Length: 413
Ligand SMILES: Nc1nc2c(ncn2[C@@H]2O[C@H](COP(=O)(O)OP(=O)(O)OP(=O)(O)O)[C@@H](O)[C@H]2O)c(=O)[nH]1
Ligand SMILES: [Mg+2]
Image (cartoon, rainbow, N blue to C red; front, side):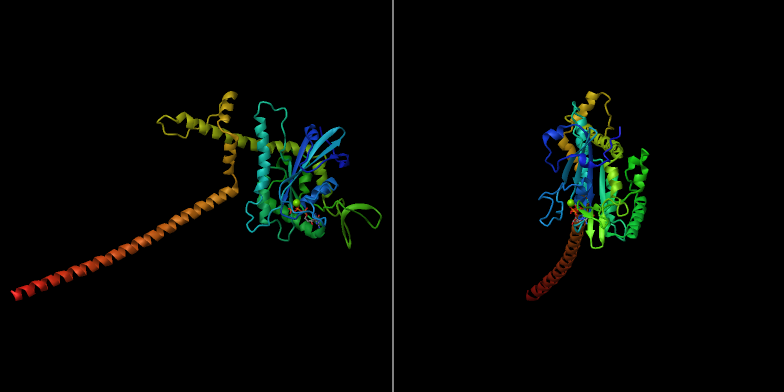
């Protein structure tokens, strides 16, 4: 069944931020979660208001006194319940802090990857529980990745971030602030974007293509957007949403100005189910990887406890996955969730890079100290040789003096 919310979203019962009432949260309905990611100041937070055509975020926390959006500093979840023809869709927008502002921006995208994986992990853990009737599904179905169109094309940071994100989620690239670029600049950027994703094998909504649905949506990416919840009256008397300039209005919903309508159709229209279904493929890949890690940890602990107390040296036993579900559960229970979380720290690229750096600086230090020690030893050996020569000279002088004494004594006697 295809749920169509495309008519308009004003049919919604809305509520926002993290304050969801218990009553509404317990209502059943499909879940759809979108993460907004990208560098700072590109209009991620503003896009939520544009999408829902409401001043949903008219809260002190989100806006400065002059009305400009505040820079997002933590991951915020904004929820809205969409109702149409008796169908309920619980739409969640996850707004993330923009990145790229620091001197060293390496791995600055990792908190978003971690967030996506945490939702998969939480769902996978719930699935291993005996009662699965009330699973809380916070899995992310799409990531809107905001890009800044520059003459240089896609930045290295965006390439790196998108390469990682596309492996875990339906990646939907968005070109921010389309009103600031001419038609030809935008076309040039889109062309450069396509060449870059081919060159770096960045796959957009990978599993959506495999299911062979709506591939023209993929062709249209990246979508250019203009954000605004404001309304202005054009010279012809028609009131439109857009940004007003001295020369006219950059319209949100005019396809000549930007691709907002296409993007909204993708997110709130006929493709929502395809995005939900294709997320299952991403989830299955993560789940299989996660359970293998969990079993591996359990197996290692079982091997350790089997060998403890015996004189046997621990051997690298190949893992055998029990077919009996009770045995399988026992193996999983060998490892607690917190132990597993610790294991996952080792997958954090920032941690891996920091560890490699530390190891290198440690081995460099050892090499330096060895060189210092060698020099010191060489210096000592040289000094010792010098002392030996001095001793030899003193010894010869003593012998000569003794002979002189002997000669004097013989004269005196
Ligand atoms: N010209 C133009 N300005 C925009 C557009 N969308 C947002 N802005 C402005 O860009 C600035 C940043 O917008 P935000 O929505 O806070 O951007 P953000 O990506 O959430 O920023 P961080 O939270 O810092 O990552 C604000 O001053 C917005 O008014 C747009 O489509 N066109
Ligand atoms: Mg923001």
